[in-house]
Amino acid sequence: MTRAWQLSLAGLLMIAVLPFPAPAQDNPLAFTGAKIIPVVGDPIENGVLVLQAGKILAVGSAGSVTVPTGATIQDARGKVIMPGLVDSHSHIGGGSGGDSSSPIQPEVKVLDAIDVRDSTFQKARAGGITTMNVMPGSGHLISGQTVYLKNRRGNKIEDLLITNRNGVIAGGLKMANGTNPRRDPPFPGTRGKSAALVREEFVKALDYRAKLARAKGDPEKLPARDLGLEMILEVLDGKRIVQHHTHRHDDILTVLRLQKEFGFKVVLHHVSDGWKVAEEIAAAGVPCSVILIDSPGGKLEARDADWRTPAVLENAGVVVGFHTDDPITDSRLFLRSAAYAVRAGMSRAGALKGLTLANAVILDLQDRVGSLEPGKDADFILLSGDPLSVYGHVLETWVEGTKVFDRSDPKDHLMAVGGFGAGEPRKAHLCCFGTEEDFR
Image (cartoon, rainbow, N blue to C red; front, side, top):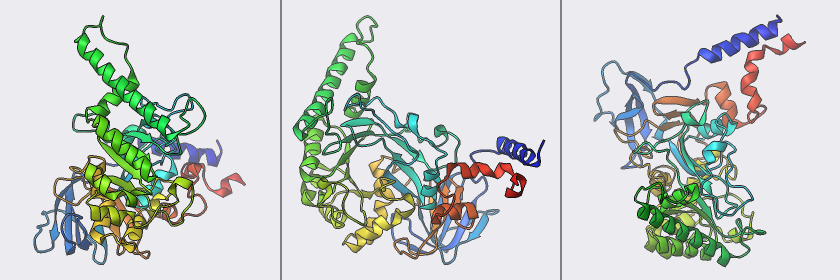
């Protein structure tokens, strides 16, 4: 056996016995001396954050928090700690949803198409993202079920899943209107037909529910099971939120019209023209997930996109979150979305909330993530400075009390800054085949 293959076998055996993912912190861990931005309440100078078993035990100023006896203490003086970032709209992992057979495919699950070993997950950790809503694309009126993930280290999708209080996998339903779903039949060719097809599907679901009720559980009377209509009923029953791609002001109003007609929960995504219809959005009580890009273009319907949109929506009383739509915005650069919004008039507090707690609300995960409060998941990031400064860097990312990114680690640093091998899936596996000398 050659030296290279001996190294290969040894490396593979090491991988096989490594515990994966790593367990959360069993003993208390305390970060002291940092400026803490809890998102709820004012920033805390000389703050203390205590965590144990994946949860936050305490957070507050040095004089108000007692560090438990035996806790490991990490000196964070000169650093900033804030909640892990929540990305309400991402496409990391290369997942895809519906195909070209139909414009409406609610039965499709994007979780069946995600590669959790893709380097985009590592890059998201480098950007401080700890929770994300991973979507299928927007080329359909209904392109499938989204999935809410924790950015844990894992070998399979099940290692990253978030479950609801009732144990069901958490996620929304991706819908879209405007230009994206308009193409050759069987897809709609006009905006009017797009809305008509959606109405038709929701009416079918109501009829399906009536048939189920009339059958009263009798197998002989039950209609044939329909996975797509089952999913629409989850939406109509408020068990699943519609995450709706929409850009133009009239398309936004169409979504609000359908929402009022059928009574489902919805979040408006992108909302390039949101500043034009902010009052209508606020009156409907619908949250918005906004993307801010540093250069305009891409599609005609987004021509009036404006950095002022988050500020206008905030002033109208709308819940405003941000998203990457990765790869549109690289997950490593998510913090700058809030910086753009502040530059255009949004409040600093609102912008930081838009990266964290507002997005947690958008995903109905606000009882677990989005702020630094006792009892919530120990998801947080350690920064070198102001989160809205171009000179600040994410130094560490923690998910449920486990460190999943460390900028001082050369492998993580590569993912943070880019360079040869940063986007190459094979690079992580080349560790097991010896050095270049072994192949000469």
